Length: 304
Image (tube, rainbow, N blue to C red; front, side, top):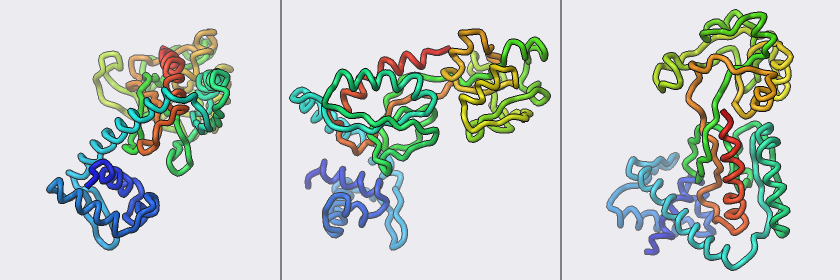
């Protein structure tokens, strides 16, 4: 039995959700896929997948083995890509996605420089404020801000991003600086629909001491937007307090148009990651792109 091929088959079965779909993806017959899985389980002495006529689920052993398979296959593909990248100039087309505002500020500029550096590469940058399914939508690499839960993705963590509450200095002169999140229930706040809402979350006991429980705080708002940029402009004009990611408010804070408040109650920062599908062969162009983007994206997460 080709153990690496069997590992790939096992991973594809799990990613595709069925033996039949895996057979189609691998361009193999269904009996071949079934036989490969059975031989793999027999060689390991464990059951990896519980199978019925209607469903399929990982056993605990299968879950552990799946994670190791992904890591081993990624190492093999990385080694092969490294050899290939030494033999040819990056070329081809890459589809990249990132959040809209972060993409405009911190992703688009280095992407432009990357294309200028590699004349045989095309990059399509999709700026979307939603979680994109990389495999289903044919995305090569994504910039994501927030927790990662998809084990089918390889992630390079670039840093962390604070979530901050801000207000215009003129608003703070009128209403005074809040000392506790509960005061927001009586202050005007600006919502970004789909991101913030009537309940904002904070940590009691102090973010800097990394202790305390998370709590939900209802806030009052007469203004809501489906765009973070519009909500940010409203906050700069003194319309209310806003909850944003640090990079979104950094220019306005630096220009003293906004001031960060309630810092001791901030939740822990969220990760900023560069990720791509685990099953995707790391081509020379993708390898070059990932390496190119690390430095500017790490710099963008240094916003404090």
